[in-house]
Image 1 (cartoon, rainbow, N blue to C red):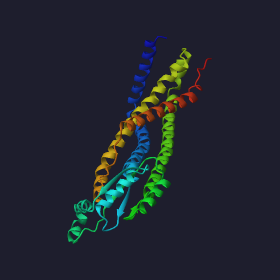
Image 2 (cartoon, one colour):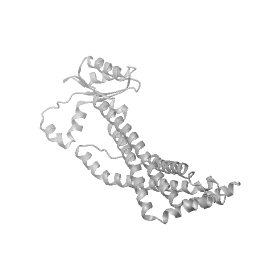
Image 3 (cartoon, one colour):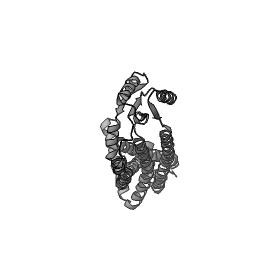
Image 4 (cartoon, one colour):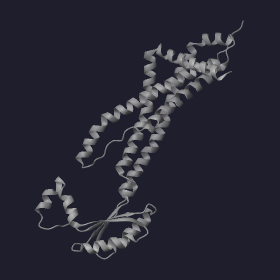
Length: 307
């Protein structure tokens, strides 16, 4: 068979399957909507996990720790200590925040502006913001913080990774939960498509018997049903993407306003191009797989009856 004939037959089957769906618009819409909802749920959970990781910040940022010098320690001592720390192989960078700069920054906050203006003197100490290298693990990081805390002039070292670990653990749990839910829902899509194709095969059993009696091959009879499953998957994936985009649009504004009330610039992440392609690919694979299972199981049972 030439490639042109092969492509022509597949194009005819694809167009014919689309025509079959259009002749039952209500049933098709219900099936496609169910598939879309099933595909949209794990996608929404994936967006939630990605947004949570963005909320946690980059790992380089959350590993930073602050070194507060004792009251009365001169800025020269802070600069000298920063120079010593920069020579440590486990430290990537050190930033010095003078007490005056910290007070000016805090005075810009509406919640603290009045309190800072009422004070006669600046109560804030000089501060060092230390960023460890990525190769430093938690144990080494804690040891580094303890070592810095013993340096002359240091009053307090604030090193807290516990909340980040808790958040990351929760996000890992949600990610695995999303994979489990996604797998179950994909299986549900396969079952829905397979059952729909099975009913269509039963309704067209007489037509299939005649086609086989006239010499039609199994591949020829199977092809339209596989394209039915393919169209169910494509249309279901499109519906899932629309549901996902509509949900993100509806929740984006309220979440941004809520984050603003807590002084955060957090925004709910959108659906990336890879997420959209993953939803569409999942719908196509599930639709095609469900149709293949139904056709493999039920089509072989239909054989022409010869008297």
